[in-house]
Structure formats: structure tokens, C-alpha cells
Length: 377
Image (tube, rainbow, N blue to C red; front, side, top):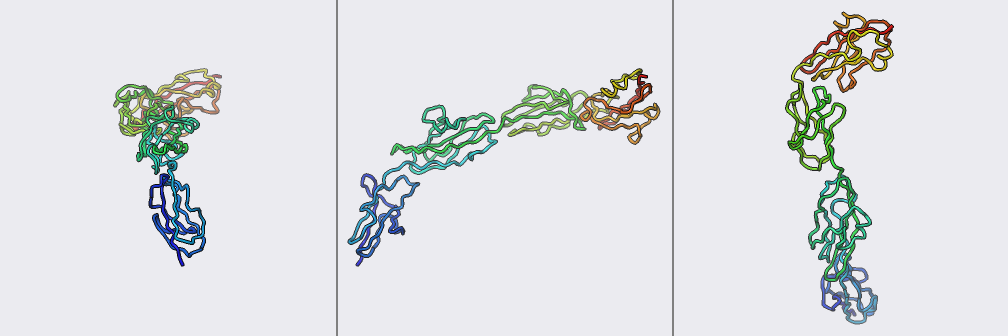
């Protein structure tokens, strides 16, 4: 003969509930209320699936299991309200870096939750131990909201945050894990004014949103710290002997990381001839040791993008020299020769020397005069 085993569930007050999976000897029977049959006098173990994501926790099974079923029996599972599940992170991902200094904090919603308490700060310990109303408490938002704005954050800073799930009916809170992310460092804009040979042009005025903020340099970039976002820089259309050709990137520009900003200027005319600095033209008694230490130097005019250097012992040979001649020393840009000087080895005492500098740019070349000096005996 067989007997019937009935399965039912109830809450802590004794009110019937439904929809819980009933099991017999580990095999699913169906969701409550449900039933099955067994042979009379056989022993079995009745149970219920205790879903850890559900609001209720199995507290008791009556009659106790396992048992021998000699007659029709009703097995009752009693469930009580449990704490809400722990929230899980969506974004920012744990350990994310280089983030904008304003974030939307998102998490997965949980069952049995009426509110979420959100904590945020720059101290791991502070956030881990934070409570409602203290300095790390950011806000409380009702379920099913699963996102809040961080508000403005500092650049280059690691932030920690936590989401607690709260059930207002059972007055139970499940403390969340501490997550973290790091914001991007404050972007820098590296500003240069360059000529046709990419030499830096000194003292070109730089403007930000129409206001003067400084000048470019011929030895390094002019650097400006800015916030992440849209910015507008400007440069004069004409500067000295140059005409502005382009600005890269075009303005306004969106800055999210360190950015190079280049104003390209082209010379309006071919350059004026160079002039000697040391030794002065027609100098005598010039010490070879001094030439070996300081070199032979000269000055160039605005718009000189590069220059050809010629040097020799014969006036006419230097005067008529080309880049194929033995007197040709080389072609350089001001960037390659920032001191505007050059060195000649094996100079002899008490000897006449001649030299010439041809100034060049995309508009043409200006042949230099022949300069001379005589070394000391």
C-alpha cells in the first residue's frame, strides 16, 4: 500500500505561502503546495529548497526529517524573513584607473531590499567602518534605484565606496564590500609655436578663452593644467615675421588626458642675413683654446628655419662654397644648434680663417657675408 506526503510552506506567523520547491530524498517534487506518494512503512527525507537570494530563510521542518511514513502525512516548512542579499558592483569596475573626476556609481539590485545606503571616500578604513550620517555617507536611495552620482572628485585620487542593502520591514542591513577606483591625473596641455622646420618660436602670445595667459618658449613647451572637458586656446594670426598657418587640434578641443597643442607659423619672407657673434669679423689674436671651448658663434634673424655653415682657410673658396664643397660644415636648425655655434678641430695658431652662414626657410635662402678672424701666434 501507499501513503500520500503533502508539502506546504508558511511564514513565521503561520500564514500559508507558496512557490517553494519541495524535495524528497533530494529529488524535486514540485513547488508548494504539492504532494507525492511513497510506500507505507518506508523512510524518506523531505526538504525544501532554501534560496539564498530570497527574502526568507528556512527555519523549521515539521515533522522532523527523515521519518518513516506509515500514514498520509503533511510536511510543513516554516520560513522567516532573512537579511537582504549583499549588493554586487557594476561600475566603476573594482580597481579601475584613469577615470573622469565625476562618476556614476552603479550596482546590481537585490531582493528583500527597500533602500541602499551608499558610502564614498578616500580612506579604505573610513569607508569600511562608515555609518549613516558620518562623513563617508554619500546618500540613501530607494529600491529599485541602482545608481547615484559621485559628485565632483579630485584628480589623481583613489576613492573607496560601499553599498549596504537595507530591509525596512525586518530592520536588517547587509553590509556591502568595499570597492575602489582611481581618477585620472589632471590633464596638462603642452603648448608650442613651431616654424616650417618644427623649431620652437619664442614669445608667441597664448590666449585661453580670449584672455592672455603667457608665451611660448624656444627651449620647452608652455604647460597649462586644465580640467577634463572642452577648452579653447588661441594665438595671434601674425607674429613678428610669421603668419599663423594652423592650430592642432582645432579649437575648441576636448581634453581628457595630457594633450599637445601646436600653433604652426610660416615665415612671410626669406630670412635676413646672419651676423657673427664670436669671433667678431676681422678679429685678430683669437685664442685657439677659446675657440675650442666656446666654439664659433653667430646670430640669426626672425624666420631663419635652418642654416648652412661654411668654414675654410681661403676667402674665395668659402665665398663660392656649396653644400658639395669641402668647406661645407653642415646644415642645422636652431633646435639642433640651440647655442648657434659650431666647433672646428685642428685650428692652427697665427692663421687666417674665413666662415659664412647662409640663412634659410621655405621662402628662400639668404647667402651670408664672408667673415674672418686670425688666431693668436
